View (cartoon, helix red, strand yellow):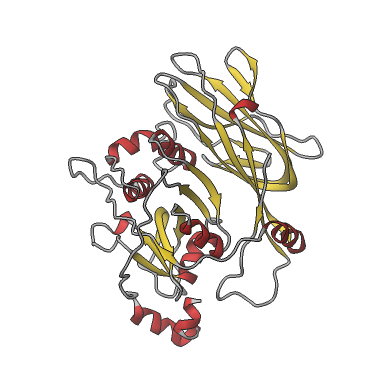
Length: 378
């Protein structure tokens, strides 16, 4: 399996003393040909041993299913001491018989929170199981992208991985002209809590494809969990609609800039609990939310498209100061991003005239106690 490691850069206003531990992310891929059929309607992936122990795992599947096919996915993890989790339900795709209510699978040392495995001890290996539950036999198997994370890896270990793999140049600042896509269906009806679908719709529209929000919601909604925002479903919605997409983690802004320079739109998973020490955010608080990242400026502004602000006409080219957005995305949500890739020969459409930062007065007031505005923007 392929792997690469990444780490978090120090936050703009954090202590200058080096951290003794940092997150270490390792990436793995399971190809469709690697599934082994073990029963009439059941396949197992290889048991993948991670290069380092981990206590968190996220994933996405990649498949376009013919009509009436469907599967359920299960995940199991193993420690070096042969301690293992049970098979944990990890989602479904396609046409399957639905259960009325579903709760997150929990076990002795962890929980699979819909799309994110969180562990209280470190493990070393993982394996997936695929069960055919469609109306017609499953003939197309998914690829899988997996990211395992050690949230308290020794800084020296993280540095070795980064130094071995990080030879990329820093990209120049670029802001993509991603349009606003409100949480409205084709009839103009407001559909609350569909930020993830709206963000995906904005990304597809940027690439020249307009998809009605209700069509995207058909793919992204998990009726068993009654959830509108599960990461693998959003990613595979893009794949079913003809695009390539994958899950990733962003721990530093150079990687963000490189990804934007490839004409990719990052759907950022953020959460913003109320706190008095934000510098100048566009709102006071926000529970779990998804925005489409347009880019980062040289002077420290993060530009996003935010469907939650569509009603107030502030969602298009919505601006954050970098320290605030780093906090609500990289710190609070581990930099999880759903990356939507451009189709072949897609046009790069940069913003030509970005408006000035709209919250300068708020930022100046904050700067009186936290430092200069220029420091806040770095």
